[in-house]
Length: 56
Image 1: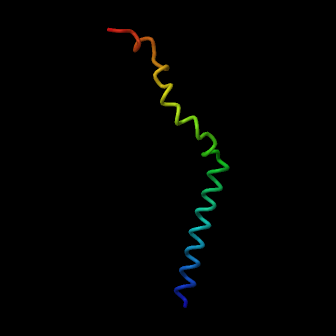
Image 2: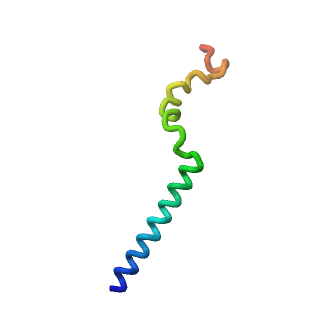
Image 3: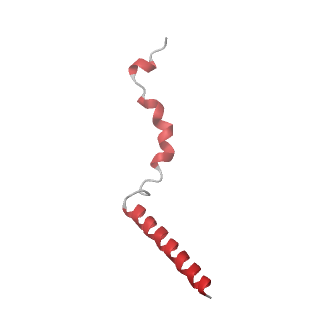
């Protein structure tokens, strides 16, 4: 019976740690922009310098 109580306590501790980490990441703005990174690669070629765009 003691092992069941110990396993429940450990699993609740781990669950609370993950919940705190999730709430911290939401408040820090990690999940704010979900669209920008997916289209950023489409516009990367427009940032070339003049030296790279001249044909050899």
